[in-house]
Amino acid sequence: MTSGSAPTAAIAPVLPTYNRAAVSFERGHGARAYTPEGEEYLDFGSGVAVNSCGHAHPHLVKALTEQAEKIWHTSNVYQMPGQTRLAERLIAHSFADTVFFCNSGTEASELAIKMARKFHAASGHPEKFHIITFTGAFHGRSLGALAATGNDKYLDGFGPPLSGFDQVEFGDLKAAEAAIGPHTAAIYVEPVQGEGGVMPATHEFLRGLRKLCDAHGLLLMLDEIQCGMGRTGKLFAYEWAGIAPDIMALAKGLGGGFPIGAVLATANAAKGMVAGTHGSTFGGNPLATAVGNAVLDVVLADGFLDNVQRQSLNLKQSLERLKDLHPTLISDVRGSGLMMGLKCKVQNTDVQKAIVEQKLLVLTAGDNVVRLLPPLIVTHEDVTEAIAKIERALVALEHAKA
Image (cartoon, rainbow, N blue to C red; front, side, top):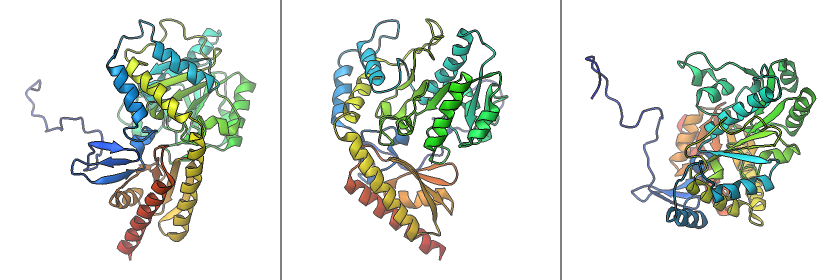
């Protein structure tokens, strides 16, 4: 039923905001996903860096099943032991003193923004609410996160963006410094940009941002929604640069496929977030934190991140070889850890389509990049198979162009 008398156009039952591929999956195991017809795909998309432990990891399945038989939801009105345990473990392995749990990366970005603004208000400087962000960023789909992202493609049609965001060129430390003014509260940056084209920030750039924040009394906020939780070969990407943020947004791989997000912060950065300043109905519920704890069990196990680093090197070197063999199609290989991108000389969607036709799931990203995000449990044999599939796809594209 529709209101009014004007006829309405037909619309899909699910709001058509995605350009969905004509394939679906009903089950998965490890790095592989299967269609209802039984076709096997090697999954190097991981649900956009979400399935950190692959599909149907037995430890995650056990944790979720056991919790589902106990209690699903109580709300944050009450104490939740699993939530406290997950927070304590994240704190023990990071810079943070405190953690807030939500349901997604977008929600984590929203709280990070609020927390930075509230910090300065609580410090007697409510005029400090501007946040410096960077070109190529992606921080989520809510209006606040979109304003921080600053991409006209995502902002178009939604009215004036939320004020208080000053965007400068990614990697340009002098531009960041020049943007600091009397209203600046924080700097918000992805250590590795995902949607923007799999662009890692240099260690020098991140160290420089840390120094700028210290010198000007600003908060350094990191978005590790996609690059965190072991994706780069360390638990958190900031560790490679030898720095620590004040606030960090986390999601995706933290739940291994179950929705959960988190904001980690120092006690100082979080000082304005007292009772009543933020909340979440579902955030950190018993199901989500049971799985989050199980993910940490896997990722923090002896040797796990060492293997991520080994397979990262294997993948990068293999992709570099493909770039050299197919210079008319691939111009660059970039990324960090198991977060790699192929910069294409032809349309990246054409390259992605050709690869998917070889039964390998990959993604696209900005700057005409094809993105590879295999699960962190990926093996040497998986990488070898993926490279063979990509090579066949590239050869097919070259033949089609000839």
